[in-house]
Structures are given as C-alpha cells and as structure tokens.
Length: 154
Image: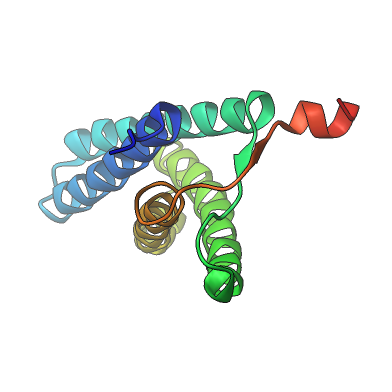
C-alpha cells in the first residue's frame, strides 16, 4: 500500500479544520456568543491561511500533481477542479472581507456576507477534499512539475 503524500495531506487537514471552525463559529453566533464567535472565526482564518501557505509553497517549490486517473474521466476532473479553484478564490476573498467587516464592526455588511461566505467555504472544503481524494487516494497522482522548473526551463 502506498503512503499518502505528506504536504497535500497536511494542507487538506487544515482546510477541513477551517471548515469545521467556520461551522462552530456559525453556531456560536446563532447562540449570540459574540466573543467566542470572533475567536473561532479568527482561528478558522488562521487554519485557512496555514493551508494557503503550505499549498502555495508546495506549488512553487515542488509543483502541482497532474490527474493520474483514467483518461475518459480526466475532462470531468478538470471541470471539477476549475469549479473548485473558482470557489476557493471566491471563498478566500469573501473570507477576508467577512473577517475585516466583523472586526471593524461593519455589522450590516458582515451579517449579510457572513452566511454566504460560510456556505461558499463549506463547498470549497468539500470540493477540496474531493480533489485530494481523486489525486492521491482513488487514483495515483500523475506527474508533478515545479513551477520554478517550468519557468526556468530546467
């Protein structure tokens, strides 16, 4: 049995932790536990930031892993991956805005944006786990090429 790759496993764990803490924070605010909500959502943001640092570092220095599954489903994986990347980018921007508006007490915006951000983030986490499973668990990952190597042509 092949072992799972360490960095993708760690980064996926952090995005799962981020989604769990967002869910806890959502529950806390529904219970009017405002201070606990602030702390939990800040922690969710930290987990997401750790994910991003690991993911970006891995992408730059090691590279991205190509889909290694059957060719007849590669197009579906690619469309799914584009959907996930779009969600993740939108979720990150919404998350930054939501945290900022919460801490600046711009609560009319925060109350409208927070639930949308949370839903987008849940779907981001779910699709991120699916990408991880497709790349490393269900199928063996394809070739991994470093961005630096690709740019420098080495």
